[in-house]
Amino acid sequence: MHSLLKRQIRKHLPENLKDSEEVTAFLEAINNSYEDYDGKADMVQRAMNISSKELFQTNKVLRLESESQRKTLTILEKAIRVLNDTKITENEETSTKDSLEIDALEFATKIEKQAKDIIKMTAEKNTLLKNLERQNASLNDYAHMVSHDLKSPIRNINALMSWILEDEKEKFSSASITNCNLVSQNLQKMDALIDGILRHAVIDSLEEEQIQLNLNNLIEEIKKTIFIPENIQVRIYGKLPTFLTEKYKVEQLFKNLITNAVTATEHVDQGLIVIQHIDDTNFWKFSVTDNGKGIAKKHQESIFNMFKKLENDSKASGIGLALVKKVVNIYDGDIWLESEENKGTTIYFTLKK
Image (tube, rainbow, N blue to C red; front, side, top):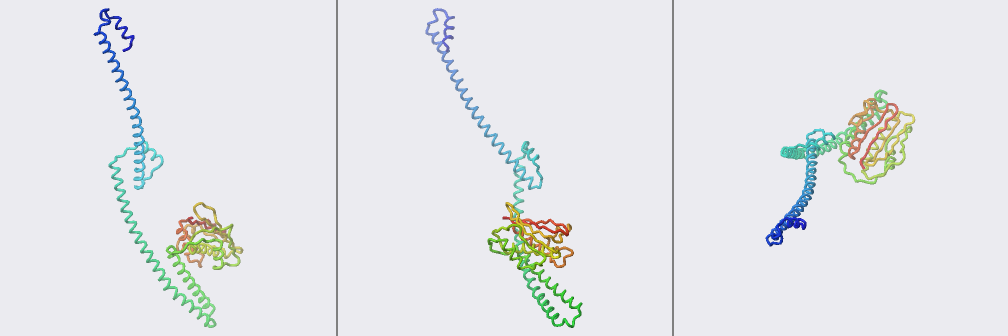
C-alpha cells in the first residue's frame, strides 16, 4: 500500500486505534491484497503480451499457408480447364485468383478423372507408336522390294531400246527415232523416280555416324557430282559453318535444293545461285537463292508436298523438295520460301543446333 494512503487512513482513526495491533494487521492485509493484485495484473499483462505476439506470428503463418493453398488451387483449376480445352485469359486468371470458390471434393474428383484419362491416352499413344513402328518397317521393306523389282526391268528395257536404236537407226524413220528417244528418256525418269521414292522412304531411319561437316567443302563436292550448265554459277556468300551432323542427310538437302535451283535458272542467260548462312542463336539457318523463273503463288504453299511439281516442268519428279522438307523435319527445323514469277526464288531453312 502506498505510504500516503496509510497516513490518510490513520489520520481519520481515533487516537486509541491508530497504533493498535488490529489496525496494523488490517492495514497490512490491505497492503498484501494490493501487492497480490498488482502481481497478478503484471502476470496477466505479460501473458497477454506473449499471446499477442504468438497470435500475430501464427496469423502470419496461416496467411502465407492460405495464400499458398489459394495459388495451388488456382494452378490446379487452370490445369483442369486447359485439359478440358477451355481458354483462360490473363484477366480470367487474375479474377480466379482474387475470388476463388472451389468445392474441394469436386475438384479432387476432376483431378482423378483427368489422371485416369491421361493414363488411358498414354496407353493408346504407346499402342499407336508400336503400330506406327511396324507400319514404317513394312513400308521400308516394301520400298526396297519395289525399287529392286522395278529398277532391274526398267534398266533392261532402257538398254534394249538403246541397242535396237543403234542397230536399226538406218531403218527407222525420224519419227520412230524420236519416239525411241522419248521412251529412253521416260525410262530414265522412272529410274530416277524410284530412286527418289526410296531415298524419301528410308532417309529418316538411316543410321549414320555424325562428323564435323564443312559445308563449304560439301557444296564444292555437290557441284562436281551434278550437271550445272555453263550459263549458271553457284556461289557461296560469305562462309558456311562447320558443325557436327550426318553427312548423307545434309548432302541430300543441299543437293536437291541446288538441283532444283539449276532447273529453275537453266533458261537464264546468266543464271546465279547463291547459298548463304544466316546467324541464329538456336538454329543453323541458311538460304538458297536463284534468279530463275520463280514459283507462282498458287504453288508456293504446296511445293514441298510429295509429287508436287510446277505445271510447266515435265522433268521434275516432285520428290526433291519433299525430301528436303523431310530432312529439315528430322533436325526439328522449318522451311519456307519467298518467290516472284520471272524474278527468282529464295528458300530458307533451319536445322536445330
